[in-house]
Image 1 (cartoon, rainbow, N blue to C red):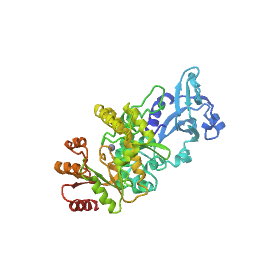
Image 2: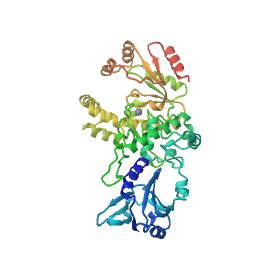
Image 3: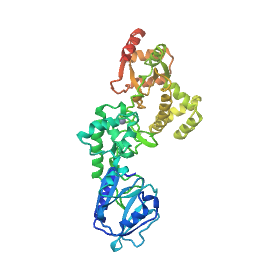
Image 4: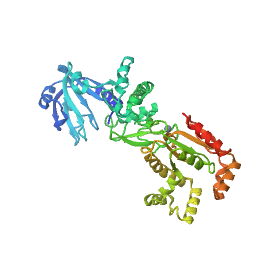
Length: 460
Ligand SMILES: [Zn+2]
């Protein structure tokens, strides 16, 4: 669906083509296109001349002689087409303006959502669909701000509020995703939970994004072209929209796509944190560092606890998942068959690409499984060795990263009779991100020392 930059591009293309041209007559092939009186529309336009084309938000206005104004909205797929061909009508044509000298202005609309409404210079701005529009999203002035802040103070997701044309107008699905990504605001965050600074940032990035898109002729997405053979260039600049499955250029997390009010919404869960999800305590660290000890301690303190390793093992036993992983590996996968486990390990070592493909598949499944527990449990602690690798940071309010000396680590592993193969991991440094919510726990001392640090780390 064309948004402000695309409609601006349509206006700029249309203007030189039709200004000064006389209308002989108009034929309408889809009556519901005309939302004012149909007969009046056809009669009054006879013999008029196009004087100007203007735009407000996603609406276009065709100004004519006799003070007439056609209000029009392209909606999903409406397109103006100027032509001199002898057969100007195509299947999608909803209206045809017969101009002088065998020139035509067609309005083609495969989806039939577009609209036209005949008004006049004195009153077109008072027609309801125009009167209710808010400030243009790239034209917010200092004195609009107090009123807009009030309008954003609603218990609706900010993405939905950005699409509400009565608050800011001109933004649709593409630019809403782009603006929120640049502002680092989660699309599901309620307007009422935003800080004033967040809202000011939205105005700032709405202007930057829309103005840049106008300069580049808008975005050519799906089937929308502003005109025959004309493509915008902004789609090459899109950072978030349509990039689900790609990784975030800032933090490397895979973009999520979820539906919000029926619209596909793409965002980075780590750059655009949903603070209502930031509730669990995460425990991570290298193998044999004592993650389970801390998990059990938190269990004794009333936390609902989860082990991501156990969860993954359960997932691996589900037939659909087993099949999918077998397909990725090109070899039968079965966690309960030691010979096959060994084979899988060899395949993973030989092919980092296959290992990555398995991870890219299983992490999002695990992620959903973990989040399912968030609704029922207030206090929740999760042991996640791969927390940073899987980019799960966003779901934790505190992350305990265990630091341990190699000697202690070997002693721990011997204690639990772990196979020595896993001790290969000892040579690797444990990678973590230095976030504010990350707390380092030194695991070399006695239990008392360990628990004291955990208590300290969990204090707000
Ligand atoms: Zn990110």
